[in-house]
Amino acid sequence: MKKPADKKEIPLENISDIETKKLAEKALKEIKEEGEIFISSAPGRVNLIGEHTDYNLGLVMPMAINLRTVIVGRKTKNGKIKIISINKNEEKEVDSDKITPQKNWADYFLGPIYLMQKRYKLKIEGLEMIVNSSIPMGGGLSSSASCEISTIKLISAMFNLKIPPKEVAVLGRKAENEFVGVPCGIMDQMASVFGKENKSMLVNCKNLKVEYIDLPENWSFLVCDSGVKHSLGSSEYSKRKAECEEALRILRKNFGVESLSSANIKMLEKIKDIMPEKIFKRAKFVIEENQRVKEAKKYIKEKNKEKIFKLFLESQLGLKNLYEVSCREIDILIEIAWSFKNIIGARMTGGGFGGNIIAIVEKGKEKEFSDYIKEEYRTKTGIETSVRVVKPSSGAWAIKLT
Ligand code: GAF
Image (cartoon, rainbow, N blue to C red; front, side):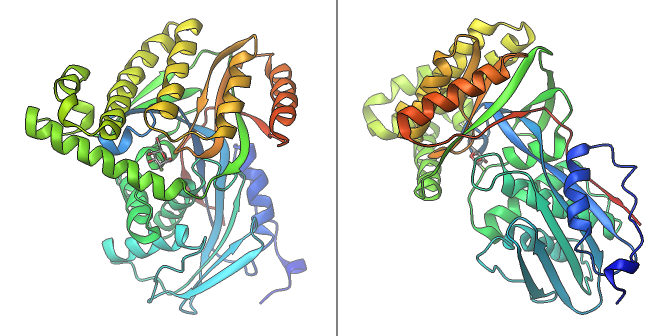
């Protein structure tokens, strides 16, 4: 093995994305040997609107953001898969022919590798992967999906696999559902694969069709972290999913619909009396939220700030009162955002029970908004919020570096 001092500089000039470059520079310092080195980069996302509709085969409107998970990696011959996390300052190693869930952060990388070994009959002798991410973990900005998608892209580049983009997203979700054990929908993986600069996406989760929506140039997108992630999040997520299945069972029996997203409010009202109240509330939220995504597309195109404000507000109130996935801290943070005089729209983003809110303000108002929400949130809760301006960004990719 060569000493680090003897190592050649690895060229990064072909990488135009500044965030990736920054993350890669640090990761490359950990590569111990020269030879073929590959790099992958996958974004996190914010969901503008369409929450908890993905696993109901409905519509979502995420945008990929300029926070990314970068992996640099190389093939080895020692029969081991070694993953080094710069963020955690930890490394994990498993036998490459005996990958099983480790019940820790490594599973977001091992899951996709395991599935790819099986599906594409890959012979992996060994791998070394160094991961560096700027997506906060557990903040509802899809750090897990970005790890899965970055891994799939990296392995595809290394083994010269041409996997169609939708299959990449499906594989990422499968890894999370079956290997990590989280019953998520497909939104986050779709956003990480299909992101585009300056655009959000309208994804139909039934057929995985993606339509790109131009975002007004003078709108700025900010994420504000509530600073909490309530542990009941994952168990409540599974409960909501089961409640939606129960609502669908009753709706299907009466109207033959194939998903909650193909039902409507009239149908729901007709069977209100035979549906438990909680199940009714969950179904009402999903049906209305799906409708809001369609309206959001129209109002974004029209740059109609008042209508967007109202839609985001109704989405948030539905998440709080009907779907019951908000929490005290998010409610406070949102109320503060809504009270900012130049706000265009604000709502929680992601699964709920903490994490981040997304707020839209006009360009030039970012600092004023950030100072305002930080100060007010500190006064009301004693918690510091971190505010980040995020930009709609491109989806995942991978290349051979050397
Ligand atoms: C999480 C899940 F991973 C997504 O699939 C989605 O259901 C979201 O919560 C809620 O809209 O991010």
